[in-house]
Amino acid sequence: PVPELYTAAVTPATAARSARWADGLITINQPDHAQRETLAAYREAGGRGPALLQVHLSWDPDPDRALAVAHDQWRETVLGSDVAWEIAQPEHFEQAARFVRPEQVAEYVHSSADPGEHAAWLVEAAEGFDRVMLHQVGANQIGFVETFGERVLPEVTR
Image (cartoon, rainbow, N blue to C red; front, side, top):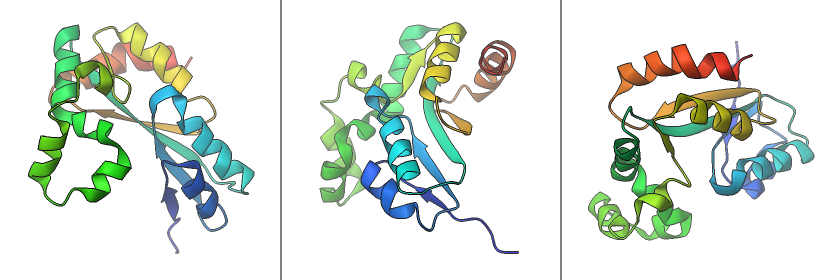
């Protein structure tokens, strides 16, 4: 059997170029729900396969810790592709990201201690997508799985 080939795209242009050959689309949550523009470009260019959205989350019982973990683990994502293409060494990412503030990271990684807030945000972010993949950026994986399994997913799937 031939495996399905999905395109990974974060820009509308890439999604549109991939639509004619891809069996599906994978993208990530972005500020101002820009993932919807990526999905729309894929569909408008003829993409018919499933659309998957990976969402970056930081959950912790302490809201300040949730944001701090997101900032510690994912602040480099704020730099954007133009900067990232110019960076040659991993340590240069750290240097470039040292001026990124926690509130900037919050645009890319939904950070909260409130399961209801996560549920509402997931419903809104996932609009139009066929599947959603959750990515907890912090180390508290057991707490995340338990909390989301008991308190978030039941709200999202009803």
